[in-house]
Image (spheres, rainbow, N blue to C red):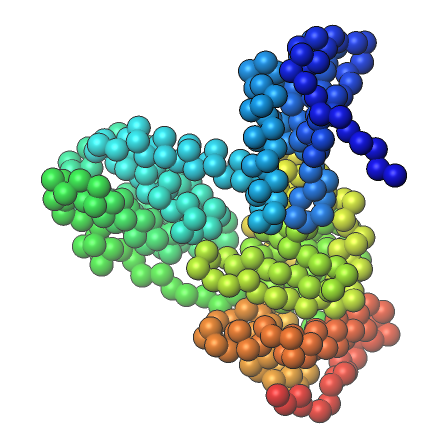
Length: 427
């Protein structure tokens, strides 16, 4: 028989005294008052997240928050949970939204380039991914703010902008290649700063010099991502098995191979995205206006995730593949590529994804089934059709056969390339 909790009373709370150890007084519905040895009295709410995980929420200190007030907070949390909303995440989002609005209000009429750029950064919240807007901000801080950040945007000349962007295009990236792409991207972002200034205050009537400047910047020469040939896959698998790097980095590479997902998706994956019982990964879109992409998981991927679950928990964002370095949250963008290079292969993580695409096609699977599995956009109707139960099962069979194929090369005796699928799969 469940224990009946008698609700607290104001006089009971007021007269509560501290003890040598902290203790709790329960009010029901998960709400309790924690009394600390120091005499502090803190309201807490114990609840179960929509994901099923138990959590706690701080609701303030007594007497700043009265019993009546804290009960209202409890009911509000219950209301959110009934809608499938985590109250702790809701609070975090509200705090971030307030901070963004504070930034916008503080600099509303300021013509300084840096402050308008910060408002652009704030305005992109919810319209782009955090990774994208943070990249934009980092590039502003590196290349533009030191030179023109404190200047009145109306006083910045086109030739000054051209000099800045040209200098960026002549710098070399980590691969020793000119940063022409970043220079042009930076110019496009700067153009948005001018556009925002005009939208916010029509009296600016600013000419946007970036529209002219970009025409004269060096063109970016597109290069195909480095990749291994399909026939080198057995050697790659054996090298991966022997790789002595961190288990999370190694597991991230296996996850890319087993699913064909982009590095960004793997780096951003959270445990709440996975249903290991059903063998499903509900991959969050990399762009905010896209749909959830349902990824069937082969048995090998499920086993891998279960193995690393204890290693990868405890980070604040509940990431599956967090950084292996202290002070960093997400696994770095370069981690997978660097690991592959240490294994002795000249290939990027994106190149490995291309190997998955080639492999699935070589094994005879229908190209459109492969395209949907890899998240290549072919139209909402097609994507929706192949996300449905029937085709999801077919994709699950495809990825299971692919995972079996990959695992067949873990032993050196399997170096000779063999095809597990002889008959073309037609849908």
